[in-house]
Structure formats: C-alpha cells, structure tokens
Image (tube, rainbow, N blue to C red; front, side, top):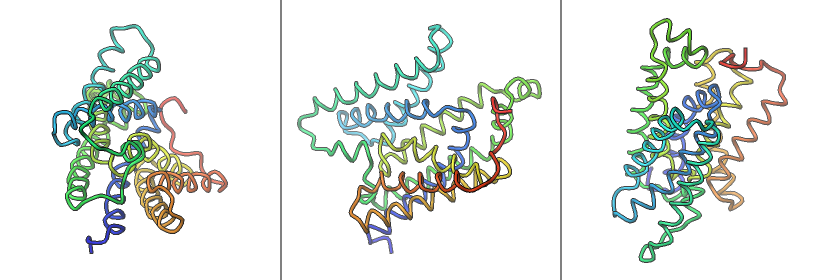
Length: 270
C-alpha cells in the first residue's frame, strides 16, 4: 500500500495534520502566529547546518529552533525590546543566516523550492515513521499538560494562583512547536508550516462549542485540507504544499460564510 508515492504523501500529510490541529489551536488562542513564523524561518538555518555537518536535518532543525525559542524568552526579559520586534529580528536574522550558509555549500545539490514549500510527494517510509512517532510524543505531551496550559492561556494570573506554572507551560508549548516543525517541514516546507498550524484551527473556531471540540475539528479540517490539496495537486499539477494550504483556506472561507458561533473565548477576547 505504501509503495505508491501518492498514498505515502496522504499518510504523511494526515499524520502532520493530526498534530498541527490541536497545537494550532493554542497558536490561535495565544495569538502567537508570528512566533510560529520565527521558528519556521529558523528551520532553514537548521537545514543549512545539517547539510554542512552531514547530520540528520530533523534533529538539527529541532536544536536550532529550540535555541531560537529560548533566546526569545531570554532576550524578551533583558533587552527591553517588544516581543514583536524581537520576533522579527530573530525570524529574519535566522532566515538570512540560513540562506548565507546554503550559498557556501557549493558541493551540495538541493532544491530551495522544496525547502521553502515542502516536497510531500517524496516522503519515504522512514519519514512516515518519524512523523507518527514524533506526533505520538507531541500529542501525548499536549494531552498531559492540556488543562494547565489552557488555564494559563485563558488567564495567566488566575492559573498561577491555582498552582499552574505558566512559564513552564509556555516553555513546553514552545518545545512542542519546535518538534512539530522539525517533523513536518518536509511536508509543507519552511514558509507554509505556520499556515498549516493556523488556518485549520481558525476554520474550526466557527464550528466548535468548546476548546476540546475545536482541537478535534482543527485536526479534522487539517486532514481534509491534506486530502483536498493533494487531490487538487494531482488533478491540476499544482505544487503540493501550497495546494494543501489553499484547501485549508477554502475551509476557513466556508466557515466565514456559515452563520455560527464566534469561537472559543480565550485570553484577550472576553
């Protein structure tokens, strides 16, 4: 069954969508989309360093993205610069550094387009194993911290008063996002991974009546986006990664047209 490239792409994409859906809800609730972009841009630097050191890209991408996330936390407290400016600095600096490093790797042949927009049709059995193994770890950790993380998302001060460690929850969420980025980058690439996190979750808001339902619907909408995007890509010979994101956008627009609930109430929206 998995010998067919299209089937492998479907299986890999569905695995990524299942992980990105629930995590994307926290990205939407916390309004940290720009943080997701920063991690995604830093991934290109991780890939460049992996080529340079001839190591497995997944581990180097995770390491570099983790360093960027921890740097953000440290610099935000000490530099006096706003979070948005610091995110922009880290995002564009890491992206530029990655492109510079890649320019020196003249002995390595790589497709920059596949790095930026993904190459889901070339996934291997090993990639699928990595996606589902890493995805199981991510979802298991997310389920474990769901209640305190959601409490800290809705009201940080109240959550801390009730014993939840908001800073620790934020750090774990960042690490889960970096791991998701590392295992998903081959599917949709550096520039589109944030869209796969945000768009299905945003689409699910109009159809959900609670946070858990929104997480499940976000995963479902991600799966529909993968199936619809890959089918359209095969039918009309369009790029696979962007086609998946466009399919997710279509679901979001359908949600806007449909009369429904505004979505789950979260911090800053009450």
